[in-house]
Image 1 (cartoon, helix red, strand yellow):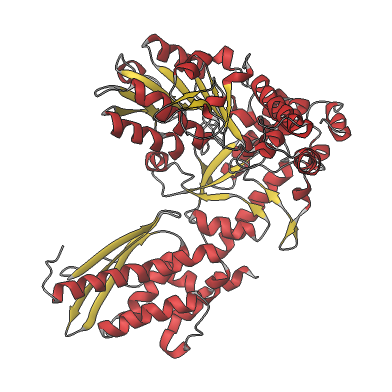
Image 2: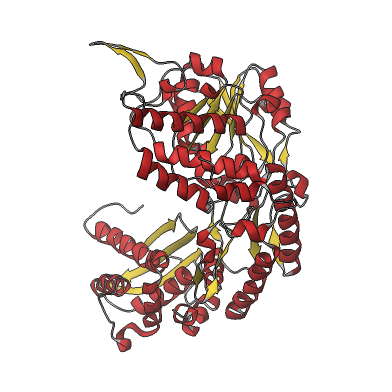
Length: 421
Length: 150
């Protein structure tokens, strides 16, 4: 499936040849309001390279069939491609066994799966779930459901003044009552990178499992679930160059074995009787109905692309862009939230600019084809902690350039002119 | 689409110098709502007498469109009958749907918000204050029919 175009990526030298990478992303050729697009919203969704788009097209033109059931060769091709994508995703996050990867629509579905199929059977009245106040709503709301259903209680790690999680209270909030620690791998708003191995060890010491929301972590960092010793890791394909509704859940195999199924239906069963059924082994136990076949195969192509470029090189590139953006924004009079040290943060940069409401600001930036996201970023707890109703967020990926940071800052001046702020 | 069509001078002027933005002591009706998408918040308070909106104020925070619209609303409905105020809410909504070209004499500064129609995401911001007013006056109708004030 790896095309000739991919080979051209593999050969490139480091640091990133961004101009060459950009040529792989057709959307970046678009113009709005007469200006070239400056796409600074990859924390929301990433753009897709030709290699991914081409893989999906080729799948539908040449290999489309439903998985597993049919005996004809075409269906075997589709099944092989789907399972090959699972193998790629497993390798990408350091999982030794591909059966530890459950395919689904991404992080939201994965957290709901764990909160339902794992947590509800282990949580009892008086037990606790430990979250943090930087979490995305998708790593809060499913736990609220689980707590309400079981009588468990939610507790929160707070954010320190330096933009890192305040772990000074860890011993008091993480106790024998804690059964689940659910924490982001990288904040979607302020980029904070919590110390995952330390949290995993602390969770295991009290007998809890750790669930990592990897929606932002996995696209931007080299991740090794074995080295981090996390129990569950969620993966959102559309934020890592893959199609929307691709992604999945990594889970330790012994946990996946013990868990209840999540959605019931075809393909996840062994035998169905009048009053009960038996189920397949993981991962298929959690994959009911016809899957997002083309999307997951497309995600496999995205993984190929990212590996060819190199995750360490991508992380280094984003660190440089983030440091540059923080400096330029602060010089322009913006308040930047989150850690200032790029070693402990990723490339989601939220800021507040001269009391211009983020919605007004983003609207004005759009006139210069600068795409940023205004709002609470599905993190209302964090907004309250930061003391703002909303922020403007610029977020970076492998295809962004310092001159795009310049375009953002130049456009701020236009907002200042209109609002006289 | 020029940005100047959205951020008209009169809108920015209302945003920077909002009219009737304060708490209203002795208000018979008071209603709050927010737009969770943007974090816009509007509270509308009003004093009523003889079916007339005698005085109306707003409080809140949010983007320029939501706050300017609230400011304009307070000017537009002060001194008009409750029925007319509710009619205006309907007309404002029609303007935002693009189905009504308002009479400038009657709509005054609010005509400036017509440009918002071309920015669909922002229509909610402009309409928020009118939603709150309708709810507030709806409560007032409840009171007249004997429901207890909240």
